Image (cartoon, rainbow over the protein chains, first blue to last red):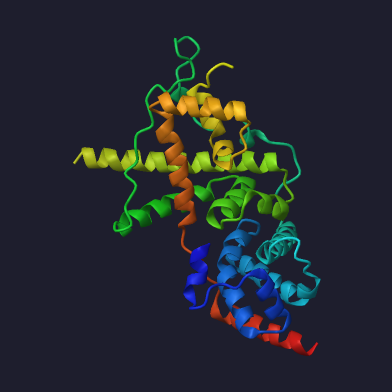
Length: 226
Length: 79
């Protein structure tokens, strides 16, 4: 998240200053905020609606609601969290109109239960050491910053993995790990309990880790095979 | 308290990273990690996964949308 503010020369202003400037109709502050936060909002909006165009409209509608609702911002959360909550509500309504509803309040479904690592990876009850790895996870050759091509490919694997997640898991991991909101903020944005948030986040991370593991194993096999 | 198995530990990694394990389980988690050659790498890989997610490229909103929003912001001035 810190990178976003790196575009301009001046650091991103703290909420108290930002809100005061926005209420004073400071256009520089508005442009800075829209420029810094819209990318993350767009990424998130996509998970609720059917097309890229409607995601962009959700972002636009969110900012219009922010412009007109600035005076009602009470500072009980950060401004960014407040904006994000408006986006989620806007996106949910839009998703419903498009026939895409996400069952936030429902009890855990099958995809939120059960082991996140294939039980076959562990020794069974017949062994002396049940539940221990049959074969240890192999170390990953994580690219150094200089190896930009490899890093890019790794990011592509992660992006692709995200598309396979169930909606709720994808939205939680996007907010937490891609956009950097903390647990409390995500619970407030999505109206989730802390325990549910953690379950969804854990399942999502374990799935993405599994995809990276497959990718690295495949890359190694290709390299070993010449 | 019985020792954690690897299969149990992998389900606790997020609680561990979030700092939400109860003290007893946290101690069992640490003692397992200290002696297991498989779970250390697993936890590291979960951390690397989180780090890679944080490195995904920013998306951007088209310039015309930004212009329209700035115009709306200006208009708000006169309301």
